[in-house]
Amino acid sequence: MDTVTLIRDNAKHAHGYFDGAMADVTQEMADWIPPGVAHKIGAEYAHLAVAEDTLMNAVVRGGAPMFSSSWAGKTGISEPQMYNELEWSKRVKVEMAATRQYCAAVFAATEEYVGTLKDTDLARVIDISQLGMGQQNVAWILSNLTVGHVHDVTGEISCLKGLQGVRGYAE
Image (tube, rainbow, N blue to C red):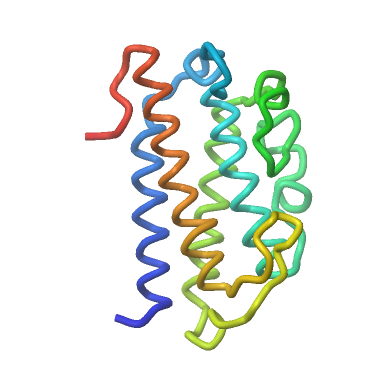
């Protein structure tokens, strides 16, 4: 198996695993503000979708994120932003039905784009110093900031679901 296929398959698996965890999340569950400094599910969902959109479409591909172009005004997210800050997470409004559609479009775009890459494309170095991560190649960005991030947020959301008395991960 070549590296591009591995990354694409890992992205598809991570996206599917995330979608499974989100499948039974209601609007009420998404809006619940947990105690302490944890973020609500809706904010985590919005953060994941916008972060992947920004990383893939702006940072890696050099274009505009979908939330500010083809999906402008249709994401269901009152304040699309990449960073998941506590104050933002408390005030952001996330309309789950619209955000599910936006997130599905982001995931599909990521998987489609990764499928077009060649191994040589993965070696291209991108300056992501604005994220505090220096210069990294495309393979590192896809593996860590896309696939790894999806798994991270799936775990966070699963915990938040558990705090609300429902199963976190899909069976």
